[in-house]
Image 1 (cartoon, rainbow, N blue to C red):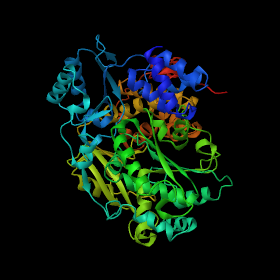
Image 2: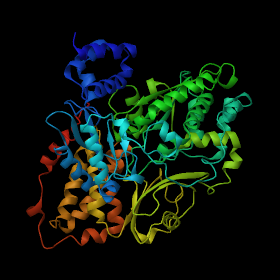
Image 3: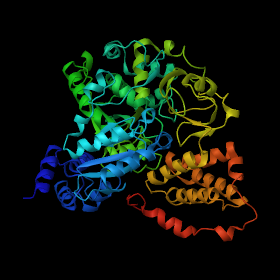
Image 4: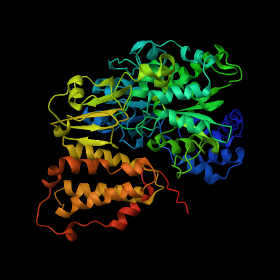
Length: 602
């Protein structure tokens, strides 16, 4: 029996030969063999009693699953806009020189593979890279040379990490810095492990929901749906088997707040899941953790085990008779779209991370087709403080319609990138002053899917009444070429991250990018700008998930607020026919990009 088959039999056995654990099995195989061999797919399909194509379509969907060996040491270098601002291209050149191969390739001896990857949640300490799941930050030429030299000497990747920021990072053997610049009154307020759970003996599930509703907290992942209302709806579902999912897949470029919360307050996150479970009558929670945060996994699993020994998980949680609740961690494997709640559910079930049609909504039919609440890491931490300190206390912060505080992940052209806990209602001007950003050309609010604003709008407020945000704030200095350095980068990102399920997203995103490049190359005509707007509105109207609906935002919001930059590149007179590109060819090219196979559903 081959080594591959032996390992697959071992790992599928540990997973109970359950198809819903397909992601876990594929991750284990990828880590073991540095790719997913066809023999492994054959064996997995047999052991799980699934068709081979079902296994293949999951394996082909995620960025960190590869068909060919990706190197004993696999380097994924972030190519997000902020990484490029901070010198990513120079670091890439140094890697290529020291390793001896170009990006997208593996050395002839199979030792090192070099690959690009999207934002890995390290915008405050770029350039950054993942090497076999270990994060390396603030890269420079000397550091890259030392890393490559150590790899060639056969050293383990974990042994290359020597600088730690705090005991939590030392325990995780991570050099990632927390970079907390402003500690606010809610998430960084006094917190004692287990205090909120002790209140379960004093409160009914309805009272927990009422307290959350009275706080007026809205989801902190970006959508802003009232948390208490979501819990209330789910608690009234006719089906009694219910689930709690924590969305820890913060893939929005420029966002890293959940990374810090999971580092400093992981038990608070888990306690928030327990509170949600108690409120809706659930017995099982799932924390979906992005692959880029794999380095956190051992510590998180250790903490879950400790909570079980302290009766904060398991049977009769915190002494509450009849309330049984436990949590498992589901790893992702590189897919921005899995931050969308229904795509996250699909992935947690072992499938492609394709968004579902809605309705029905997760509170009706979610994980395993059962009623499910899905909350962001920051939301769950806030709920813990609300239950511990009261909804009235929470409402003393923020504005009338945006209660509480918000964690901002600030990066880009500023002196003090990092984490800031602010009260809703702060202006962009105040944010710029706070982080040491002088003479900003633009600010990208809420990541690529958000809005790019000009200095004329810096008086606007961050709150649900004016400018809501999931947390990403990217400062763009005067020295940057806004269209080339930012907008084009974001369009590359959306093209790469589309699941390909919706035709407008799959076909029009690359078309938008090509028309943008046409204008930037000085080959545009006046009608191109209006056509970009028209195509962007089509994207908003016809795509079914947030990714597709907002994929044109980098272009739409910069046309709205910086139209003069587009018009300056138009050189009349020219005709559309002279520089027109083949639309059909563009659509065809988009059908299999980034190695992600597109499955077309009837």
